Amino acid sequence: MRHVTLAAAAYPLDQIADWEAYAAKIRAWVQGAALRGADLMVFPEYAAMELAALGGAEVAADLDLAVAEVLRHRPAMEALIEGLAIEFGLYILTPSGPAREGVALRNRAVLMGPSGRVGAQDKAIMTRFERELWGIDGSTGMTLFETGIGKIGVLICYDSEFPLLARSLCEMGAEILLVPSCTDAIEGYSRVRIGAMARALENQCVVVHAAVVGLSPWCPAVDENHGAAAIYGPPDTGWPETGVIAEGLIDEPGWVSAKVDIDRVIESRSNGAVLTFAHWPEQLMRATQIEIAREKPRNP
Image: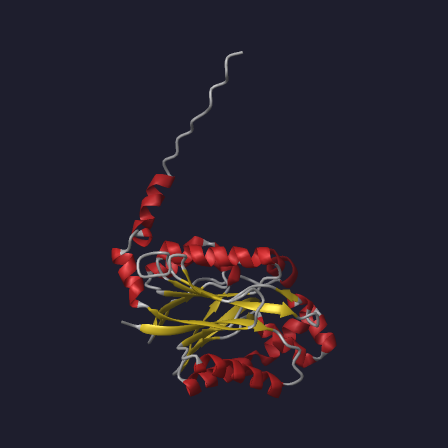
């Protein structure tokens, strides 16, 4: 059995005064998850926007200046979290946020491990806000992270609503999917939650959902945030009947954690009550064979 303790953050953004305060906050959060025995902890999407506060109120209040400030501190943030992953001997998905790749602006999360940086995943599909106001580009592909605790994929927020992204990762062997999110309304959170649960069902895998929570009016880009952290599995033999392994309360900050036997993923895919993962290709054949049945008009 491969027992892994997973931790998902419901993370509030603070108007931090300086780098020392930010580093202390991140260390405290990592320590909190480590005390729960976490082997893998997930920070949410756009939690890196907290770094915009380091530029002062005027910078944080301006969309372009806020992004530039986050980009300025991003290398230090990554180094900080990489050091904590090494120090505590665990895996951490960093807060996602703006990153430059040539001239392109991406929304990037980085997986750090006990030996340092494992790799990065950029958000694949942009929301309207990211496309129309931020000018953020989607990724050019997906990354499968092969780690000492299992094979991991990352679906950043909106990506969790598109089944083929998760399917591509799981066909390559992904057992755990990480879904960091940032949603400004309950309907947005609900879309991601439903998507995350559906991906767990379809792929008979574990999904870890981390969310930004609370109000941060000092940064209009992330001024209102609603959601909850959770860990999902397939509603199948050996898993919770609801598919919910652990779930926090809406907008309540803190860690949600659970110990999971990752070998159950293999068991479910080979011998579950249903075999959604194995039977996936059957829909492709049937979906191309569509007949049209038209109602006949009634006689006058």
